[in-house]
Image 1 (tube, rainbow, N blue to C red):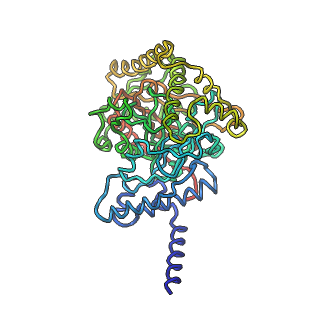
Image 2: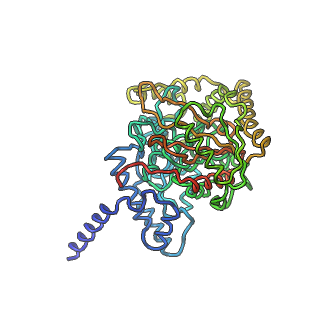
Image 3: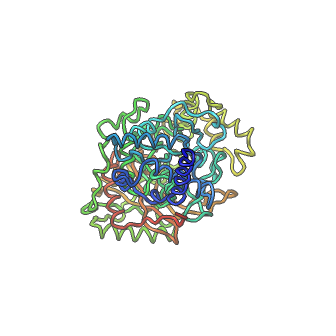
Length: 516
């Protein structure tokens, strides 16, 4: 009888999962799920089960979005543990019990791999969590998996296809499967848009959070460099790299940023964040946040490349006015385009130095230097380089140390021009932020010719190390396009408030048409 009862219970559980799969996670916010768990309508275990079931049905099968590289075999056990804490009266914060997906260049000291999408790092898990993963776990988040990315965060080749890696293959855009998800945080963007988890974390050097967020109808936050630790994240550039939230709402992004921001002794850049980290970034969110705000409109070099984007941007400007903002038009980014060559030079120098240092510390890694990675790719060319090569890796390997005069001059010029190009405009017009289209609608994925990239506004904030927040500003024939809010260093709170007001006043996000 006991065996029959156990079997009956198991069948009931399976049946409930089949009916209920995805019901609590599709387009669900952090706040709603917290209310559901507090009221007993859901548990972290049920939410995590729903997320994992949705990944199985839509990522592994069905439309095969191909956004998630692997799921955490311990996710349900972690969720059950957090449910026990909640039952005992302990709730760690807004992310308690909430499933999160991480880009596969962020170390997790568990049974999952951290590979940057490369076969060269398969077989040897990272020895410990990245600082931000430790922070997420302390906040009660359930790390349920790793997402695909443009391999090595899109720094391997100059003519690459975003969203492709040797480990994971090609991630699709859930809004139109033949179109590109943009990169390099491609899998995180596609996964969160598809409700495979509640929130996600990506990384950016230049555009890699805001572009895939724009293409997936998400809110993406590229913080000030130093607000969020990079220790335990496979690097490109210590002067531009950062991690940040990728979510379906500004409120969810603020909750994630609160969890991951903070000073880390192992990342010297975070020392500048001392005293600048908000206790809770959700406190800046007010529906009338645009009333009386002075917003500059960037046009030069960030418009005119796509008629659909320009049309949506025109509507966004009208919406900003309607919501009470004072518009200064134009208020262009200064010096834009004048430091492109210097930016690439800096990235190549810092890639070699940073990757050699990271791999040298990565215990058990089968490759220990950039030179080793280049050799691995050559030996495994059919698997690693079927579509594009590694010309940027080769150029980076030829660079000298960070004491080279060429590097020092390029770094000084790029940072100076990018920062003055933002700060001088903000000061001249007494602006709270500058807005610009984040990019174009998603292009068709093309492994032969590479990305059909049209335009972007990401570089000024990326090179300056300043914050950039993208929010959905509408659809171009069914394809999402984002609006970027850019400010000076450490202005995340202000930008989140402006972005929230715009989001609440327009409600442009539309979920992709996927099975529930």
